[in-house]
Each structure stands twice: as C-alpha cells, then as structure tokens.
Amino acid sequence: MTPAASTAYDAAVSAAGPRKMLDVRNVRKHFGPVVALDGVSISVEAGKVAAIVGDNGAGKSTLVKILTGVHQPTSGEIAFDGQPVVMHDPDEARRVGVETLFQDLALVDDLTIWQNLFLGRELTWGGPLRLTRKRAMAERAREMLSGLQINIPSIEARVRRLSGGQRQAVAISRAVGWNAKLTIMDEPTAALGVKERTEVENLIERLRDQGRTFLLISHNFDQVMRLSNEIWIMRNGRVVGHRRTAETSGDELVALITGAKPAEIGRKPSD
Ligand SMILES: Nc1ncnc2c1ncn2[C@@H]1O[C@H](COP(=O)(O)OP(=O)(O)O)[C@@H](O)[C@H]1O
Ligand SMILES: [Mg+2]
Image (cartoon, rainbow, N blue to C red; front, side, top):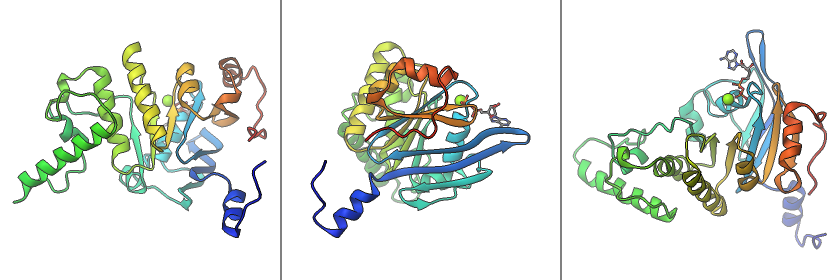
C-alpha cells in the first residue's frame, strides 16, 4: 500500500493510474468480408515497452497500419497521449508523434548517416542558407547519436558502408529521435545475426530507460521477455490475453497464441 495522497492533485493522479501514451478502444477493421480486427483494445504506458505477439493472420500488421495512418479503422477510437486522434495518412501520424521502424529499414544507401536521419524532414534543404543548414543538421545528428551511445564511424559515412547492426541503430535513432512520442517496431531484429541483435536490443533498452515509449511486434519470445514491460496477445483479430512480462512465461504465451489456453479477455494483470 502506498501512503494516502497528500493533495487533491495527487489523489486525482493516482486514481487515474499511469499515463497512457496510446489507448486503442474497440477498433474494428473490415476488408470487404474479411474481419481483420474484431474489436481490439490495447494501451501502452508512457516510458514503457509494450509488446504484441500473435500468429500470422492475427491482425498485428493491420493494427500497426491503423496506428500509422496507412489504414483507417472501420470503427473504434484511438487516443494518443490523452487526446482522441484520427490519422488520415502517415504524415498525420508523424505529426501526432507516432514513428515506425519498418522491417525493410527504408534507409538510403547512397546518402550519409546524417542525411538519412533527416530524410523526409529536410524542409530547408535548398536556398541561400543551404550550407549553414547542412552543418546544423550534421551537428544535430552527431549529438543525437552520441546521446544514444551509438557507435558509428562518422556522421558523414554513407549508409552503404555500415554493418547490419549499425544500419538498424541509425534507423531506430531516426524513429525515436525527432520528438517521437511512440515508436512502433515491427520485427526490428528479424534480419540480424545474434551479435547485432543483442546490440540493437541494448539500444532499445537504453532508450526505454531514457523514458521512450515503444510498441514492439516480435516473434522472438526471448526478445519480448527481455525488452517488454507488458504483453498483449492477439489471435484471429482479437486480444486474447494481456500480461505483465514479469508474470508470464514463453510457455503461457505459446498457449495463448495458439489457443491451447482459453482466451481470458476479462483478466487484467495484477498491479
Ligand atoms: N489489405 C488487405 N485486404 C484484405 N485482407 C487483409 C488485408 N490486410 C490484411 N488482411 C487480412 O487480415 C488478417 C490479419 O492480417 P495481418 O494484420 O497481416 O496479420 P499479422 O500481421 O498478425 O500476420 C488476415 O486474415 C489477412 O489476410
Ligand atoms: Mg504481419
């Protein structure tokens, strides 16, 4: 038991519980006759890593596409940092503060590291102040990567020359680095070897410890158990379980994912 709250404000805050960065309520998505999401409700606490696990066809990618403005929900509500939002396209999702790290990274090999970090944001690329702005962008990129303790040869290096792990570090930095409130990662280490995967996981841990908020989609149970604070389990377009990571096991997750264990939608993880 925590001591009684001392002010009305404290009481209100503790009654409201942890701050929710993302709150998805009863989202449905139909593609013609296909029901891809059948009333999904999930939330992500600020400064935490929430994971979604589920078999192929469970609806994970459809949910990610809705959260990134690629698809619109058929019905349901999404609140972001306490505000209801409607995101018509990926630019709008970015403006709201949702960044996504896709499997294919979307880095441009022939550009430098700092140019990749500013890709799609180089609003001030041309004009008379071009050189000054270039220097300022390179400097900001350098600060960002050193703040994240990312080991890269030089900010001026072309992305082509980087190892798989370094490339992923640049992609993750881009996805968290520009005031993202929520970074969604869909299988962030699927294409990496063991050593590089560990490096990337260490980076995600550091970012989480700095207060960043992540939604992680992963098939790798070890990774989910290591990085996440809570886990949402999806099957056939529904949420069939929700666990605090510290209170579950790989075996239980497999049982929920496959349906060997009955759905327990009503069960809330204990505090
Ligand atoms: N654009 C689409 N058109 C029709 N059906 C789709 C589309 N996208 C996904 N689906 C269907 O929605 C369901 C969920 O798919 P998906 O979200 O890709 O699952 P997951 O990422 O968990 O494997 C599947 O039955 C899939 O075939
Ligand atoms: Mg998918």
